[in-house]
Image 1 (cartoon, rainbow, N blue to C red):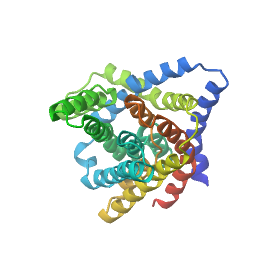
Image 2 (cartoon, rainbow, N blue to C red):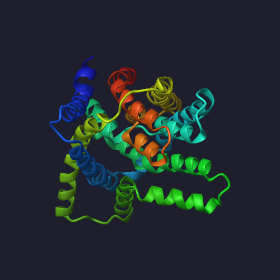
Image 3 (spheres, rainbow, N blue to C red):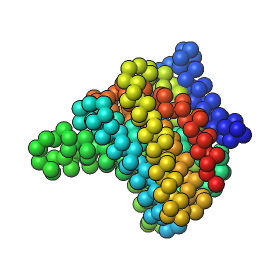
Image 4 (cartoon, one colour):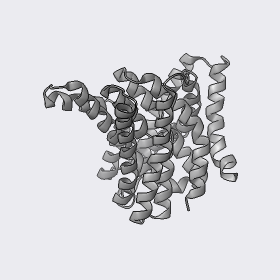
Length: 309
């Protein structure tokens, strides 16, 4: 219970305050959109750039960590994809969007603050190793499968072009790529530049959590409830369960196991709705899944923290 109160509740109080502020009209929806633009296109890319640029790549990019987490993510995607198609009779396009909800954990806005509050800032190295390839992996899987489903006979080169354009126009991936470039080159960055990036980094998570609460006001839990609960189970239970089992079986260190499981146990991020909205499929399922699973994470994250060593 102490973990729930001291670790998880403060994060969700910030989200709840953002929700309340927009719901009561104290903060405009246009203001939320501007705040989220700032965090997603500028502040969070700066956070990812700084983290990857300073990361010890040899120590933190351990294959057992990445295999454990991404095998769990892929299992969530397949559960959503196949369940959407064969259990609920949705179109293949809808099924891909549903699968993406099970694939894309909210690794930054929820995973980082909960992990930091639970285990301290020094425990985040493995989180950043996961996050470094999270967007490329998830968008790569989701966009590729969706474009293949939509192509139905188009030339493969056109599909590849669409996938690459969609991935590398993403500012999060740009921030990660710039961080790798600096890290691998060993290029020292000027002190004032580092200080400016750190100022942006400090603004990223609190502003993004507040903005996430404001965004969730738009999402109404309506219809498709069986599919939505299925998505919540795939995201909050199946993904971390597979990650935990593989991590223990592969002998992950305690710190790496914590990072992998906590990140896997997070609700689908707003990116799940953005993906569905881009393609115009399963938007109501994605929106309601983000809202309901984010609320459920208060309980499920606390339970996973009790399970972890």
